[in-house]
Image (cartoon, rainbow, N blue to C red):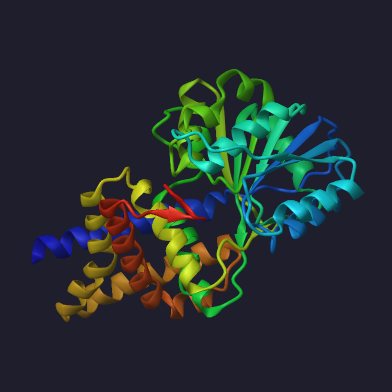
Length: 362
């Protein structure tokens, strides 16, 4: 019991240290006044996105960035997505559409769509955006500035998450909490070791020449967590990569409601741990069960230390992510319980081969 308690406290202290590092280092995209005019290809893979795609396209039109094209790849949508995009393209000459073909057996859908989009792009930079993203004026110019000053092969941004239901509030903040609680974001750029890599596929900006040479999405064609795999490949090839928080310049409503969030998050939980069931189970054990074991000791000093570190961690990750700190603190036990559910479902889907997303087995 003493060993378990000791490991739990070390686990919590280490996570708090990472959170503190992220909070102090403030890894956020910043708005800049210097103007750029490098051509940017905005590439959007879509599959059944009739409720979100117009919001993204309209948000792009608010950009004060002059030189861009928009290419949409419709991945055999069964709703009104293609019709909506086609009508939008007729009204906006910068927008073009690729009608998706049958998915090759060795590819995952999004990875194949991104690869096909890149082949049609003409820009100096390739900006891949998920269809449920919304960008604010100045983002493209600020991102291109970051590419210039840090000579990046890849810049990835983690959007502010839009939470519009209780179910989303009880689940989606886990993304920011785990990201900032486990990974020192600044080290992705500072350390050249490819093992230090993480990225967010919702916003990925590439140097086009490098992308076309290496064909990053093709190299990660069968990866569920393709974003981090690509960041690792970029660094392995000797290029700089960086991941930053969106800082109120890019937003995303990833899931609509509790069921959608649980299903979506469970799709990626086990892949994040390299498909190691043991690693995921150990992590969940110390994340959710560890604090309960410490409470059973009835040692006030240990309990106070533990809750203090967890409380400060939740406040820092919430503030850094632009989320409601009070809500995340109050919902912390619920979110941790949902994390256990997500882990269980992720393992179950992997063992049964029933991991399905948007009608496709992955």
